[in-house]
Image (cartoon, rainbow, N blue to C red; front, side, top):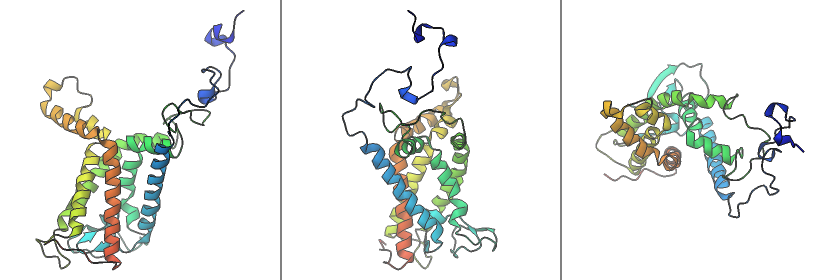
Length: 279
């Protein structure tokens, strides 16, 4: 007696897709066979990302306490609106006139935010942490079907390379901001405070995270048929590949460092304490 699976594919009865619990899949009653605390990783990821989302949203809309000479918050740099605070020698680029009444952070954060949202690691992080797609390895996701990144809005993830190009000049401007931290509050050069160390650490992590991006690795060595004919690109590809192996660590470290720099500037600007001077 023939069964449904013995029939040719064209003659088999159509079944409603039901993800991993589809009738064509293995009939296992348990949702998964894992016995470890698999939920800790996605829960921790969701908590960490949610904390950053709440904090960065508050700071982006605050439109205050983002500059304490010589430090400017990385959330507000470069400052593209006319309503920005005056920063002597700082990243003041009045491209938007007086008609812009909202926080100037909203004009620039779209680029680093878009870069991180479309990042391959962050996709994995929030797909698992927020959408449970899937929540962990060998754990069934609750969705009945899967379309991947072929439909709106997830199809926008394919813009990652273009956000990478946009993130490069932002990282360059943050590097300039870091150089300016070697001044004191009277804009005199040759000084260093605790904030300088924070900003130097942050920009190193920002560049390491940016250059460890999968798109950067592909740009360096992708589509090459013969590495021997492109020794410079091969060498760059090797360097980026070593960074890429630590992309997850760099993603979290740079996310924390940029928030700490903003928090430090906020505390200085709000008068919570003064910047401890090293020399």
